View 1 (spheres, rainbow, N blue to C red):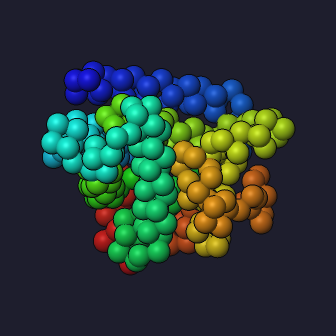
View 2 (cartoon, one colour; view 1 turned 90 degrees about the horizontal axis):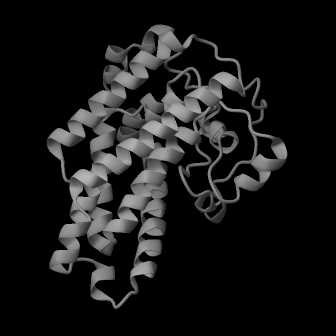
Length: 263
């Protein structure tokens, strides 16, 4: 696997999912947005462009590159043990997803990390662009954690690529303001984090914000008892966001970048 091909696969999959969920939101929205898309989308997508440029500039090889290097040098548990290729791929995906769950919990529990992560939660609406709205410093820290996990476990490069594609796709999907039939959603949430499940995590109620941490697989929340089925106020009437930043002017790109450094 060469790195240019990895980038093309990830970019194509991400762009396709973002466009698809955006179209779904227009055709069948779950909630009425409190603000127009023009007030939010340019700034949320602006953050995405900054994040992407920063990662490509500072850490261009990313996780797949570290996985390839680890395989060449025999680093990590899976490169030491005699593990079949298919098992190494499955273990890599599961281990990375668990690591992202643990990281997410830590970014809520540790105050300096929460100051970075709260920018993601300060969005006043919940849609696909919320899923790409992360502070650049958080993105870099998250990537460094991911690289460390890849090297430590000796993750298979194919497994890392699968995980990256899944994480990008599900982050957009589970933030989608999309209507899914209740009978189908109840079944889906056993296998993937759904928008109904993750919307609870964006509630203004702190006890709900500190639940449903999964991005891709929903099992960790059930296993570690951080799962919450429904918001107290109901999906249609619940308040999205955090108490500190309620002014729509806080949605501007310059304000988003400054939020972690403010009170």
